[in-house]
Length: 221
Image 1 (cartoon, rainbow, N blue to C red):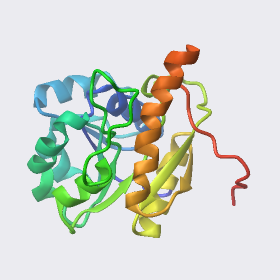
Image 2 (cartoon, rainbow, N blue to C red; image 1 turned 45 degrees about the horizontal axis):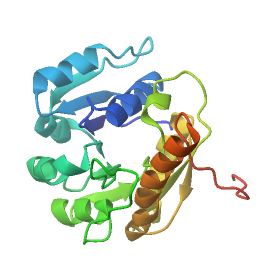
Image 3 (spheres, rainbow, N blue to C red; image 1 turned 60 degrees about the vertical axis):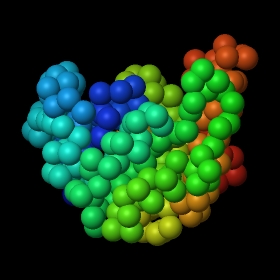
């Protein structure tokens, strides 16, 4: 990717958000860690080590991160999703928003429990409005593996109503060592969101350290 956009990671102090931040910073992307507590965001950013010559990671409130970011990544728990989306809605018009939200409902997180809207990605699009270009991805990647220097044997299914926006997110995934695949319109995100609960159950049943998803038969162009 020739030009690396500023990535605002909303909820970037959590497990998935911090894992993605670790990978994107290592790949040379300018990063802003968003948090409901700006100081907590700055503390998380201070723990990231950028390559020589790269922009120093920053921390901010979720609102300020969304305002400054060129691409917005939503990495918040399902229970917090609606409230946090409302706080950033004014700052995402025209921007690409990558939603990673999975509708997990503790304590039965290994049971698929989808929202009445169909999936979390459609909730995000509805909450942010038509001005946001929502794509969903990164649901089935074990968060702790993102912080490892090792390669990750996992594909990323990318959903969105605009093929060019999906292609951009596939390119983002490639930058951090993951293979992204076109998986259809935003509503299809229901498949990956449901699979997250299935993978949690597989982890427990087989004592797996972060089961992932690999699509066979696809030859990369």
